[in-house]
Length: 332
Picture 1: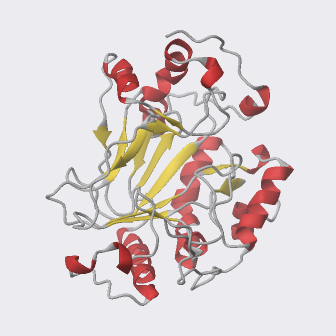
Picture 2: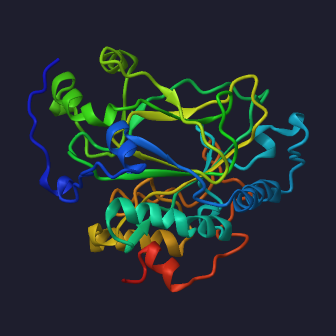
Picture 3: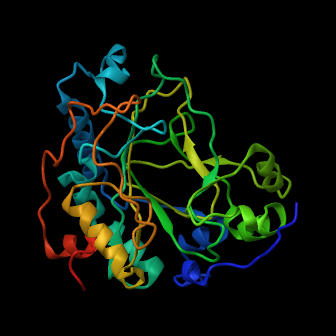
């Protein structure tokens, strides 16, 4: 189908950015393939520490959850988790270990290298712990999507996964459609109708639409990584969370973190970040825009509040100047 219009919204495009390689490093992959893996962004021993803190957090709710006993890997033994295995309630996104990971020097250096500045904001993003082959939960089907509105053109957001566990061929990991970032605007203009485009920075890619990319030689791949690696991708890259196979015994553990220049944020965005930060709430994959504050309470499907709901972290971080700058509460 043909687009009825290619008009975009100037306010959505004001922070568009371009990678202008070749660089001779992982940025070339980010530019051409839409994703990259930065090896050893965190020391493996430190990654193990963060994973253990995440697992300790999961066991802090007074249930018989035992990581050595699969029979205990059940919904009732876990805090409320999204269908895609993320935890974003109970103030977990502001736990001390989450902030420590976000502030790892090589993680910050990587994003500074992308954006050309170390004056960055960070997203208040989720924790993912995927227990493989749970008996009470069916594997999630692929849900290809992009995290950027069709109304935005150009590069606006680089998403990140701080990888804390082995991600081999059988394990849970990010699935990407390499090079889809380079053709996304052409796809939108030729295969979708502009009058269906929304400002929301999220769009599913249907099975039928996936064939358009496949006809151009693009096939999904699972991103392989080791504890301590940083996985980054352009938000225009088609992607989804890949489930572990029946042969996996790895508990996938990752922290989502996105960074972008502080100068791109409006005052309104900074006020929303301040509200979320002071209330220990989660936002989105974006750091400088599209800052949507998540629900204040962890609720079951019937709308009732989980009695285990927490309004503050178990361990609050140290509120250093650098942390407050990354959070958007202190100017550079």
